Length: 488
Picture 1 (tube, rainbow, N blue to C red):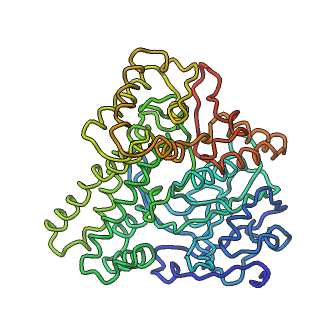
Picture 2: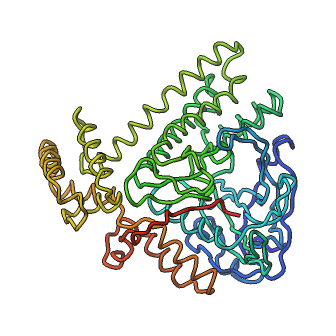
Picture 3: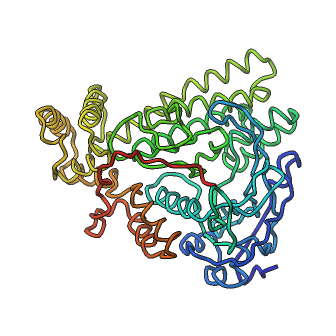
């Protein structure tokens, strides 16, 4: 074991003190020739880790799963979930939770190795991951963090020196994933389906103490727990909508209790504004399209509420009524978050009844003209209108007059309005073609310079600096639709 004093690991293992129905003790499977290819020094420092030590022999061995750090208790978590509406038993089939790092700020943070070999939940899979998807998750998760959107984060990517067989042989890799926890809606579905009421209650009490400690002594803590999770998801999905992010696979096992974005499989960012945008190759029916994400969030919360029914009230009918009341709040709470956010994108800092009509009119003009979502708001921010077809229409000219009149009815100065918009409208997002360009250079040519430059640009999305301009352009026109795939 690597000495804690040399690396900074400070593990506790509170989840492993729950009933063993919720996990299986599982060590990572060692790999042949681990090599560190990406490391997040800033994140390591915030976790209280020694970045230099982790980038050397023993540290890399830990990140590859070849060595267990002091204090760790490796487990694979059990959960279930509705995948595209169909319920199934799941679990961490290719991920091992090393433990919970206690940071210098006394935060409790999960450290998980993704792609670290088979577990009891692998269901015939090899438990491994390929390099491209792990690099992709690193890029997108760190970009989401920089955008200010709650997310799991990426500490490191290690190549394994081994091939992983998919359609062809691909280079293997392991991602070190960091999250407030890996508790999911699916964890509670699993407890309700296969556990006792006492085990379900123990899981809920654990989640409350970990994420909502202010509720621990409240007599209505389970109802308020449902409400807190609902509110966090409402805010999270509103934030996704505001930057044009499409998760791609909003199954209940990919919905965290903490309100963080998790599992960056077939995700992507929308270029042309269209609520029906779908990138995922497996979402043939558009279940998880951009415009459907708020509603699906509510559907997932209804499944969470169902799982909590035995805790909400001893009387089944009253428990159902409580659950329905709490779930019914969700769409309005989401809408309020989204409306506040999109007002800010337009420089609006107070409320008027006509605002929603003004916003919907703009979105409709954007959809009709095939306008780039991010660049439209960037142009409005700087009052610099390019060759986008939208800006050359009479309809936009009329809309702009209404918008300017709306801004004049609030007390903020032009400078304050500009700063609000500048801080609400990113200059850059992880454009899909830029991500693919970086992945191709890294995976095909072992050239990480393109990827590291992209990471640097994405780490400052609201800088609006000169070096970001080339990253603002949408992809060249093509007849072939962009497709994303579940990471394998």
